Amino acid sequence: MTTVSSHAVYDVAVIGAGVVGCALAGELARRFGGVLLLDKEASVGFHTSGRNSGVVHSGFNPKPGTLKARLCVEGSRLIRQYCKERGIPCEQVGTYVMAVDGAQVPVLEELKRKGEKNGVPGLEILPIERVREREPNIRGVAAMYSPTGAIVDSQALTRALADDAVKSGATLVLGREVTRINETPDAAEITTGRDGYRAKVVVNCAGLHADRLAHMMGVGREYSIAPFRGEYFVVRRPGPPLVRSMVYPVPHPDVPFLGVHLTRTVAGSVLIGPNAVPAFGREAYTKTSINLGDMAEVVGHRGFWNALLRNHELIGVAWNELRHSCSKAHFWREASRLVEGLKLDELALESRVGIRPQLIKSDGRLLDDLVIESTARSIHILNVVSPGMTSSIAFAKWFSEGINDRFEWTRRAGEAVA
Image (cartoon, rainbow, N blue to C red; front, side):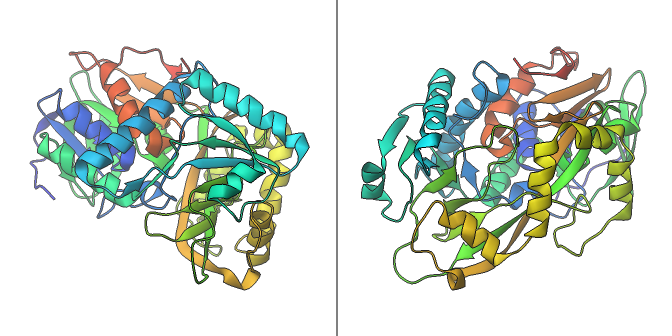
């Protein structure tokens, strides 16, 4: 960690050293003379970025023509290239989306059409016989295969991006929780529990806490983050792995989660999950963790109540997941829809648990595309392009291009969808 003077005036201060914040700091440091990267934890990627399954998505899911689609496809290519250059564990293992019966095959065909419009290379619809040539344990009638699906060590990726940001001139300061941001005509003044900093512009990339920092500055009050906990089981069995790639169910049309799926990791294990369980705190990584302040913020926002009225299907799914939280039998049943030969006693609860920040608008909409709000001296990334890790390097380039030499955000405010 670099020691800095509280009286220094930086060009840009990035708050949040997850994978997106680290990529941003590096990209901005290559443009501007002084970039500060702040995080409240003692290490980078401590929360979402270091607790995911390490999937680098191909980009066949996003709606064609959106910024999300473009950055996901480009980000997938850039991450695989970056990992190769930096020696970060990353394997292009491919992704199978399984149709368990004939009624789901048209969904695969639509996914393939979307992916081709997005520019995803090599997509195929394969009969089950072809799928089993590589994945003999898969169950179903057909699959859409995407060869560019990859797995990566997400913690190593985040650390490498942070290291490169520092080498490019950024100053990394850890263990500083931002408690206040005050905007003046000349700079943004950042107060932490231990000291203060000044910057010509602040970039809020705080993930699970991004809405709180925005609200400090009177920005984005129509948005609130609801946390969802993702739990995993790992397959413990002798012999070859249950799957060699990534195996997904067909996506649900009305729910912004991918469902329980199987992922081989760069360490060689096979994960089953995650689920999507309403969490009782933004950092509530266990079932018994409850943060009353976090819960009061969620239920006190009108978006929460409008979401209950608007998203009946999601409520049912969330309630089902909550009932089955950490249930070995539930994960086994869900996984057994996609693979055969899996035994209940082969599952062990994984220590890895992540929290997904789901942004809700005051009208009850659950947002899954980029949301950025800005003031004269601040830019707030309230909803990172999902999947955030896959898009991180491409997003950092796009974001940097949106700041002019006077440190002004030049792209349109609000939801950036094109």
